[in-house]
Amino acid sequence: MNLSPFASVKRTLVTGFGDCRYLMWAAIFHTTITLLVFAVGRANLFPGLIDSNGGASFASDSAVYLTDAISLVNNLQQAGITDWASAPFPLHTKLYSLVLAALGPLVGFNILAAEPLNLVCYVATIFLVFKLGTEVSDPRTGRFAAILVAVWPTFLLHTSQILKDPLFISLLLGLIFVVTCCLTRSFSRTRGLWTALLSGALAMLLWFIKQDLWVLILIVVLLGAGFLCLRFIQAKQIASGNLIVGIALLVIALGVPVLGRRLITPYRNPNPHPVLPNSGTRTNQITDIAAEPETHPRVKPPSKSSPPLTRLRERLVWTRYLFVSYPGTSSNIDADVVLESWGDIFRYLPRAAEIGLLAPFPNMWLTSGAQVGRSGRALSGLEMLTMYFAMVLALWGLWKRRDQLAIWFLITIAMFSVLLLGLVVANIGALYRMRYPFWILLIIVGVGGALRLQTIESVRAKDVRSVR
Image (cartoon, rainbow, N blue to C red; front, side, top):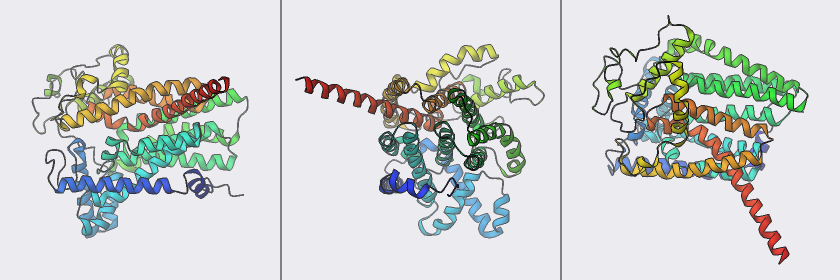
């Protein structure tokens, strides 16, 4: 018997997802979209929206990462692999530099050269959506959810860019899937050990990619450990392999940040931000609170000398300011709100939940965005309307499967994460993009609810016909 967690991968791919045909079509679809985006940029059809390299205005940091990746390519070619590895750039930038080094001389340094990495992340995301849907419901749910995510317009466009998001989303869904399996299956000690090691590796990679969003990863890890305890209580027995994973999750929560800082701090530049104190000029779209953070008494960088709780609140306020202070944006919400105390934070939570779940609101759908124009706002409005229905269906799916811990796990992750994002991310453009992995969880549960509702209606129709 092969106890490796990868032993069933071939069987899963062949029998679980239609002999890989769906994944193949997804890959072709994504490559076609990337080619179209690049062609539009080269043809200069929408010069304010897409540049000649295929970079989109709604993903302005893509140009920064492209520049960094090209710099790393030069570093790799001139100084060798050692200097390239020790260069102070994030992991995703280094990965992009490898594919740019391979394809850049052939197609140029643009989104086409970055497509191999983006394609792997996109296909991995679609596959993990299918697997999550299958794990918590059935293959039909997984297949429909995967198709919906695969054709999600703004998600498609973002995954064509040179961003950390495609890699982050696929790895985060991988971690969520691994923990979900611990809630639905019983592991042997060997399988539990392999799963624990895989969880730790995924968490470490996520920390490397988005250290600033470690709290979201921490939510997954701690909720996973908590739901495992509930499973043990519910089943009135403890599977040894699952217990190993639960202990590993707690170790990950405490150990990854400590280990990560020792490994990565000397080799990582901070995330690009166009406006920081004493650098650059601000546009008139920045609100008064963001105008002079270095002199504003309520907006200060977190102090290392502050008590832990005070430092945590200062970090929340400072992070919120950084999102508010992005230039050239017209999508800030509650930009003048400063959370001066923990009381302010708790009183703001209902509003944060409203923003995290429902923004952009309908009054923004038909206005013109500074970076995406009127068409971009209309597209986001259409997607939000779809998500409103998905949320209702997710509640229905949760109610019909309320006895399944795995469903509660996915919903709880999504709710906690969007609440935290609504609390900190006042810029709707940034919030929209950062919610993708958590919206995907709602889509999975919502599709399950929709299919269950369809089944009920089909049974009723059949009963009516039989009576007639």
